[in-house]
Image 1 (cartoon, one colour):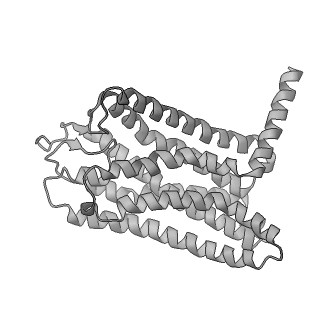
Image 2 (spheres, one colour):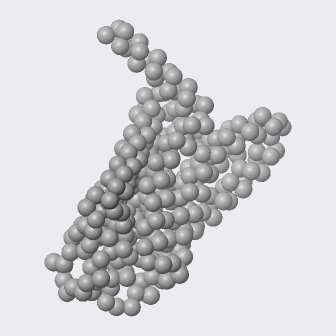
Image 3 (cartoon, one colour):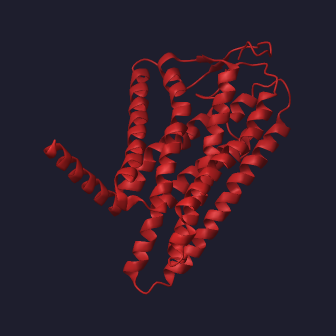
Length: 314
C-alpha cells in the first residue's frame, strides 16, 4: 500500500476482487444480472402489494417497506463493486467514501430494526389475534416503519463520525466499498478504541434486536404448539418461515463481520462475507417471500387477470 498525506484532497483506492482475463467480464455480467434481478424482484413486491387490496395487511406492508429498503441498500454498494470488477482498483474521494459508509450502515441498521418490527407483527397476529388489527392499525404501522428509519440513521452516526475523524496514512481499501474495518486499517493511529466503540454500538443494536426476535418467536412457538390440529400449526408456522430465513441470513453474516474481532480474520475476508448480506440477501428476499407464499401467488393471478381485462377493454 502507498503512503499518502492525510488531507481531504487524497483519493482512496477500492481494491475490489482480483479477476483477470475472461473471468472479469463474466464476473461483471453475473453481478450485473443479480443486481438487475434484485431491483426487479423488490420493485415487483412493492407494486404487487399496492396493486392487490387483499395484500393490504400489516405483514405485507412491512414486507414492501423491506423491499423498498433493499432497493437502496443494494444500490449503495453494487455500483462500486461493478466498477472494480470492470476496471480493477478504482479511485473514490474521501467524501463519497464516508457518505457511502454512513448510508450503508444506516440502511443496515434500519433493516435490523425492521426485522424486529416484522417479528412483533407476527407475534401479535398469532398470539393476539382478536386484538391484532386494533394493535397494528395503519397509524401504528406507519409509526413503526418511520421509527426504524430514524433509529437506523441515528445509530449509524456514531461509527461513521468516529471513522471520519481518523487521520489516514494509507489509501488502498481492501474491499469493494467503504466499510469500517478496511478503512480503519488505513489509519495512522491505534484504532482499538474505535473498534471497541463500533462493536459496542452495532453489537448492542443488533444484539438487542436479535434477543427481541428470539423472544417473540419463543412466544409464537408456545402459542402454535397449543393449537388443536397439525394443519393449523403448519399454517401458523408458514407465515413465519420466510421471515426466519431472512433473519438467519442477515444476522449470521453481519455478526461475523461487525461483532467479531477484525484482527482474527485475514485481510480481505470481509468483502467475501459482505457479498452475503449486501448482495445475496437482497437478491433472495423477493424469492423467499414469494416462492412459498400462497397469498402472493394468488395475488399475482388476480393482478394478471385484471391486466388482461384492462387490455381487452382497451
